Length: 234
Image (cartoon, rainbow, N blue to C red; front, top):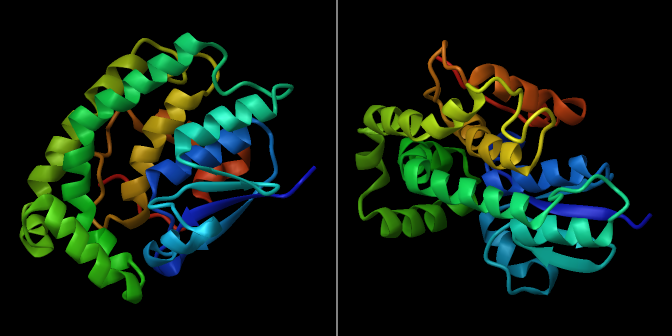
């Protein structure tokens, strides 16, 4: 089998905060494919794989380059049809898209605002001016101003995960049912993101998400615990 490499965002202490890289790593593990991660900084991304990429993950599958987490998942299903499918049907894929869109509406902005200063502070020193300039432009405020309000952003981020809680309350161990699937990897990525860098824990100690999150972290020989993490609970 050809070597598979995944370019993965890194910060200080080899923390890996990208939620999209996390879901790509889980997709590879779901397929049972051996892979290595290549840690890269924010500023290294434009020069990767011949250029033209603004974000990671980027997959190098024996010389075939695929960017974007959704394109990577589709590539893996197409290239390795004899292995467990990431999307068993087009309907499952569409529902995963819906979940992602729902979380983007309800949770992505408060999650970013809650931990954006921590991301900056954990970024490699060479990346910090770029990160500050681009994020302050997006947000419209200085990072220090946003960080001063992070408790209210944390409350909003917790509330934004309500749909995940209510789905798991039906009694299945995973969002995808009795077995983990891409829906779980999407949602878990949004938790592994702040767990990688946020110095203020995201979830309360009694949050009903915690047993599910622990199951996801334990999958595939503890994939969700292989890089440094802060406690996600108070």
